[in-house]
Amino acid sequence: MVYLMYLVIYLIAELCVENYSELVYPDENGRLVYKADSKGNVIPDFSHAGYMGGGVALPYVPVVKTVWPQMEGDDTERLQAAIDDVSARSVDSNGFRGALLLKRGEYRVEGTLRIQTSGVVLRGEGDDANGTVLIATGVKDAADKHTLIEIGVPGVRQLEIAGTRQDIVDDYVPVGAYSFNVVEASGFAVGDSVIVHRPSTQAWIEALGMHLIPNNENWKVGRYDCKFDRIVTAVSGNRITLDAPLGNAFQEEYGGGVIYKYEYPERIEQVGIENIRGVSEFDDSEKQNGEFSDEDHSWNFLALKSVKNAWARNLTSARFVYSCVEIGYGAKWVTVQDCRSLDPVSRISGGRRYSFRLNGELSLVQRCYTRRGRHDFMMQSRVRGPNAFVDCMSEKANTDSGPHSRWSVACLYDNVSVKGTAAKPFGSINVQNRWSSGGGHGWAGAQMVLWNCVADSMAVQKPPTAQNYAIGCIGAKWPGRQNHPPEYGADGHWESLGQHVYPRSLYFKQLEDRLGMDAVRAVAADFQIRDLLAGKLTRSRRGNGADFNQDGCVGFSDFLAFTSHYGLREGQPGYDVRYDLDGDKAIGFGDFLIFAAQFGQSES
Image (cartoon, rainbow, N blue to C red):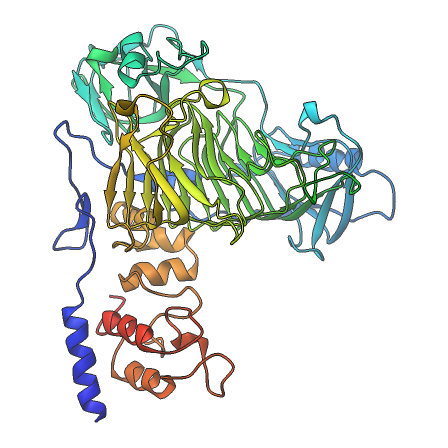
């Protein structure tokens, strides 16, 4: 009988066919193929997002100074002096000055802590209530939008190097392209830092319908330019190749584009913060609709501004008005991972509870969690990708995640889950024309990719001249806002609504294709690696996949182990969560089908 069941499960495994996207799918060697549209546009490679351009493990920087909590009083000056002491040290061969360790306990901070020098890391001893806790104290003016920790120098920007500007001569440079031709490329060399600049012309604004927004909120020429920050990797004749793909098409009919070299002397790098909890004190006597609503306290836990190759990991924020982490404009190659934003205190209204704000470029937010936020995983206006949110979760959301306003481009939402509550199912992921909302938000985003996401509802609309995608997503589809002419709110590209597609994670599969599995292992958690190796979607993060004996292959011994637990439910003797592959607290037929789909696979 056992052998008959073995034969049945083998046949099911053979018949199980992966659900692939028609736009991104594996070739016979398992590498992804990208289907271009009639103009050559493809879904771009998002794996360049993250610290050091993706695929590089976050470093562990040795401690050079330690601070202990004191019993009373404000710690702002004491902690800032310690940061300044580390900042004054010399950099080592890896570009680091050292880590400042804040020992476990509470630190009361009325002001703002600032890191404005490269090579400095701020580290605690844990982000739970018993770890390193920074308490933002004191009454604040809500108009100031106080931030507890700032990394980087605010208000600085790239400076164009005079005499280096060259026009792009191609009639059309598609989304996802790495190279293009210019009038004269002899002034460029491998390693140059460049801006690839796409103008926002009146012709383009009119093509989008953004000249029709009522109440004099039309988009203005020059206000919505795309400026992509890149490195030159090759020059051949007058053709220049870049280190990362372009997130928007460059069309001659809409002004074409230029490239120029830049310098950015004030931007700092190799900086990080880790293992810290931030809590904002507030007035609990102020309530609105039964929820705490005081706003005269700290707004933001962490802001990363004008930085590159920076990170934030293992952080928890609680009770702040606005955000846990902001990756600011001018930031590049940033990773934010394993962070939590819990229970903001504010009115539930516009301009509040933006839990993770990704306004930089080539940056990654992964394995982050929010509770009771509003726009939890979002970009504000004119954000230039590729960027990525990967394996993130929002619970009890009060409104949607997604690009928020004014033509942000090229962000991947990869296995992002956004859920409201039973009473308020407002957990949405929306990519749409927001029209006159917020003073003329208009088209919020283009070249946005929702991949295997889950939400209460989703809207994905197609802007003229561009595209947005929802592939393998689960949730109620709705058309999005329709308070504008219908030609400016058509459906985007939808595939496999209600059923996930392969690969489970587009980001990690793209990273594997580009740099190999060692790069994936450097930045992924165990469940992300297992899911990629398994090559199947319907796997629970709670278990170890179907390779129960961890021998690298899903085989007969795993089958015997699975059948010995079949039929058990949580709470019964012998129930083991490893065999509950679909996470429904019962080992049943759904788990059997998942096991069958993985049978015969090996890591090699």
